[in-house]
Image 1 (cartoon, rainbow, N blue to C red):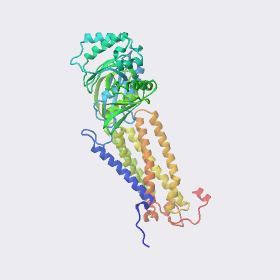
Image 2: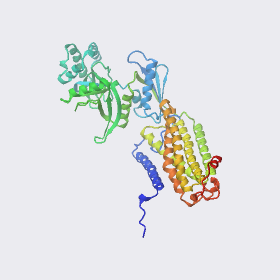
Image 3: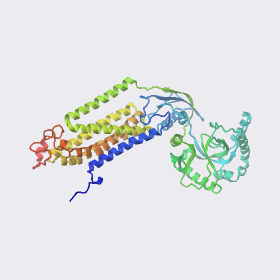
Image 4: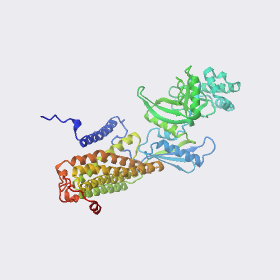
Length: 548
């Protein structure tokens, strides 16, 4: 009876596994190619890894601190340094360096070419506040209020104790008009209205004194709307989390925020009161209204969205600013300049040459000791390198992973970890053959014994990498990230490339029948009286195993 054609689903498992592995690898490189096609003109190619300050240089920004209340203290400066470091290095792998200098300066060094708006992104105070919209849709003045008049109105506003207003009173002032406020506040309301009549909305940004406990006259620079806002009803400190997100239906970026504690409760009260008339509230960042939406429904879970013409970069920047908190100081830019790589070219060349020499020694040793199996090690190392390279490219575009010399050291250290995995597997195969199994059976039995050892060894490396990443700072985190990444790649390569490849090779004549150059011949494995394709008639006794 004629045999039916073999279906693809009946292919040997090693072939399927190898095919799946290669498909994944090709898909990753195709993804990089797609990203490169969508890269804007002037941006770095997606095929080029992001390099750190020591390899490529970057931008050096000097910020001068100024206290809005009290003096610039060491504690405030250190707190500001930590917040700025979190903003520019949110993922921990962009390798930016933030340090203090003297008693009132913060120095920021960011790898790569200077980005537009980077100074504003890292130095912005980032005071986010929710305020009620007491008056909106006011036109921008053609010329500002005279300085003398503006000072007089501000003096009236400052002379009133706005902190005695309750949340219900502020809500009623929006719903029924500011005339419902107690008589003691009416002079302040009149002063606010005069300020609004002379307020010029500058599209480039507004310069106002944003004090949480006082009403505010400001504007939405996106449409020129001048607004009179209530004292703060929800401060930025009540933000639990902030994440950028993309709305595919509207094709726009926004920032999703989640409130906590009293802010969550106040937001529920405000949105419940404003919803029947779809009244508006304003979200104000550093004195500028970034959005003033109408309340469409009561929000009980404290989750809201900030919209306002964001793109991917600005949404991410704002979420980082809100997530890591407001700066305790204000900063002015002392200067910014481009700096060259801190690592001399000769030092880098020497490091690369040392890495190549080390890799060649590993290859020569593997070919000498394992003969034909050494080619499997070389092939596995090549595949692991290709996978590492594409992951470095994708992580560079996705989370800003930046390669520095310590990071490269982490990648090189992992070569030894990967080679160890292959050696453990091959030695287990040799042990099984010596114990009496045929080569094909020894490959499967040896793998069962080897994989536990490989996973245990890699788990130790991953735990060490995670510990370093959590507790270290600066370039050490880059080293830890690179070490952890390549260790995970080692597991992936050994399980889905090396093992199925060896299983396939064990079925070939050259390897499976023990050619003397294969590394699997009887003499090289230390067996006598049988071929590697045969099963021993008698199993070695325990004394023989121990003597080996």
